[in-house]
Image 1 (cartoon, rainbow, N blue to C red):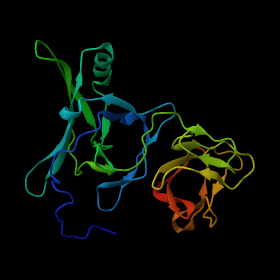
Image 2 (image 1 turned 90 degrees about the vertical axis):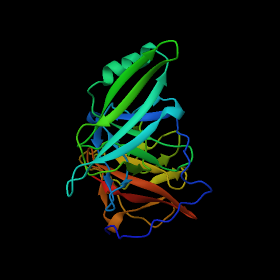
Image 3 (image 1 turned 180 degrees about the vertical axis):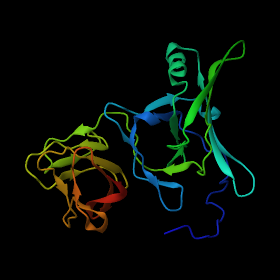
Length: 274
């Protein structure tokens, strides 16, 4: 369904335009480390699914002084050729070795920024696959302050405003599943599950699901002569797949699922699979 023009009313709250305090730990992802990119829905802003990381690659977090975090975008161009440039600005206190090494080694690295506020239930993503951000740093070390000032900005223009993201953040290796017929989905195991290679085809099933309603997980296929399969089910702790299409856990294949609780617990497929 494409975007249908509609009224945009005043948001809820006494002062909806007031500044929202930011989460200080900002997530940074090198685009070279991203294996699969979730797509935006047909309205162009909401990002459906999660970023999939390459083997041994992870997202990192950078502490930023909350009151100094600033995300923005500007438009540029003449009639019929308007484009968007996104920017993220932040400060890191001090002049320790770790921040100096961060600045040195992120120079020239294409990346995206994922940040959030303390009042929202979503995150924002700045930078895109074809128009990533790059770091432009500065240092202040004087009588007034010791801090690194960092600007991440796009050099390539795009047609996209920052994305709206409710997917997962990946700071650890995928959890290695032992038995595809009895997968336990919980906080201890994380949000990404790597299935084993199987010689004989087996149906993927879940022994327990203890994540909260709305949480997302990703299954990554392990392949094998008889790759496991995930089909739509009707029992508790089953999966509900788009159009009832069975997913085959071929090596490197993936599927994003969201926890849905309505008496029974169901894992509902997101738009992204591959």
